Length: 133
Figure (cartoon, rainbow, N blue to C red):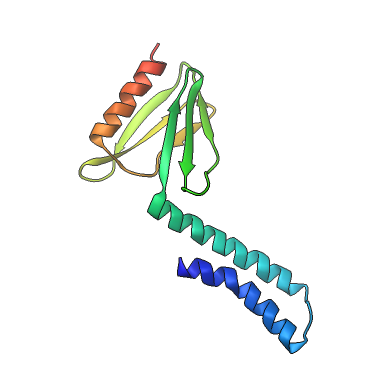
């Protein structure tokens, strides 16, 4: 988090220094501002994901909606529409945790956060309830 704050403040320090020294504004400062603010944003996303991140799955009659939640903002929605060729698969991660994925020909969802086998079974039951033909 300290690194995110420092990278956000570097452009302010550069602008302040150039103002105090009377050097004026230079076009290169725009590149500095953009690059450091982008780096700060990415670092903030990583910190929020590692401290508050969660994945939300919503099962509907039309398909599955996946969204990453960073507490203060959300990632883009991924929708896997219901179809006959929809598949659910699980992958062992570590001793008692798993990852899962669901897909059809148009889109796929792969979770990032490992979950317990118990929770995986619940998700698979929910998947089978909504999408088994």
